[in-house]
Amino acid sequence: MSTCNCFEGMEFGGEKKKVVVVGGGVAGSLLAKSLQFDANVTLIDPKEYFEITWASLRSMVEPSFAERSVIYHRDYFINGRIVTSTAANITDAEVLTADGESIAYDYLVIATGHKDPVPKTRAERLELYKAENEKIKAARSILIVGGGPTGVELAGEIAVDFPDKKVTIVHKGPRLLEFIGFKAAKKTLDWLKSKNVEVKLEQSVNLNSVSDGGKVYQTSVGETIEADCYFLCTGKPLGSAWLRESLLKTNLDKGGRLMVDEHLRVKGHKNIFAIGDITDIPELKQGYLAQNHASVVAKNLKLLMAGGKESKMASYKPGSAMAMVSLGRKEAVAQFPFMTVSGCIPGMVKSKDLFVGKTRKVMGV
Ligand SMILES: Cc1cc2nc3c(=O)[nH]c(=O)nc-3n(C[C@H](O)[C@H](O)[C@H](O)COP(=O)(O)OP(=O)(O)OC[C@H]3O[C@@H](n4cnc5c(N)ncnc54)[C@H](O)[C@@H]3O)c2cc1C
Image 1 (tube, rainbow, N blue to C red):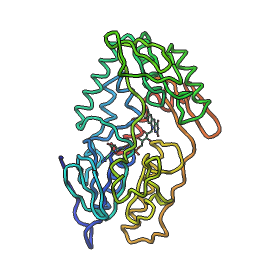
Image 2 (image 1 turned 60 degrees about the horizontal axis):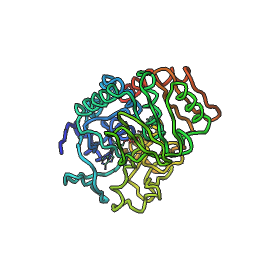
Image 3 (image 1 turned 135 degrees about the vertical axis):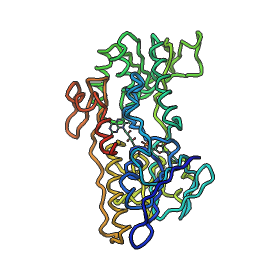
């Protein structure tokens, strides 16, 4: 476990409230940054950096891209304590880490979205992108397992940057991008086909039954796929397993999400909030919405810490079904509430910079 501790002086008239934020992803990082001068904030995250998740596939084809999308927590969170560890349990007053530390809180915010086994240090993360890039460059044929946003965006990046490579996506569902609408899935399929990406739907790959020196893969319907390497893009598990035996075990819904009220407090707990993908809010799980959750909770905590009335707390309204999936460097498919479009116009919005400049600005770096 490593910690970094740097606090501004005490608040006039008394000590600041202790706020512990668990999870340094899109939601937790923004919340820690937003409260750092109003409270005594501790951020717990197993890695020493915040990563702009939606930029990660570009970093696989262009590793230097990660220099701007993998950001040390200390670069935006300059006035607080960073605990580089995993939260393992909570009581009604403390968070216990996997390294055996207990960290007291007045207010707790859970933002553990998805669990991703990425390296602990930024340097190791950048090295991993270089290694993945070498793997792509060395392969003539690439198998992508999973046709959700990660698999589709990776296929798009490879198809545009390395048009000579044979890319195959195998997806077990009936269509790509099942988290958004049929139109978006169809436009994406057409685009991938136009770039010679082969898409096999309603099939899965048994990665343990590889033959011919690790190059021939069998699918569940008996087809064979030849590929020099593969990437597993089947989605990450929710980061809530650690709560199953905790104080909040009855606050998890069947899918493992934390049930929150309109103020984003975990139901039945006055001083525990949850934000981001871990919540059961009925909306698409998107980073821009996770950032909105962080803004609402920052407002509510500032109010409560200043002695404001609970009845004055801000409420959160679920977001509309908007999402954008990039297709290489220039194109994208975008779903809006009443329209789905693809091509260069949504591409101009997302695909060139993948919102890295905008996100860095929000984070003040
Ligand atoms: C390919 C792809 C493209 C996307 N594109 C977009 C896009 O264009 N726009 C958009 O708005 N959204 C996009 N999204 C969705 C977006 O990435 C997520 O909605 C967002 O990351 C959710 O943020 P979060 O903070 O809730 O969770 P995460 O970003 O998953 O962060 C969770 C954090 O919690 C930490 N953690 C987990 N367990 C523990 C624990 N026990 N103790 C301590 N820390 C823990 C993790 O290490 C991580 O840092 C995309 C997602 C993917 C996969």
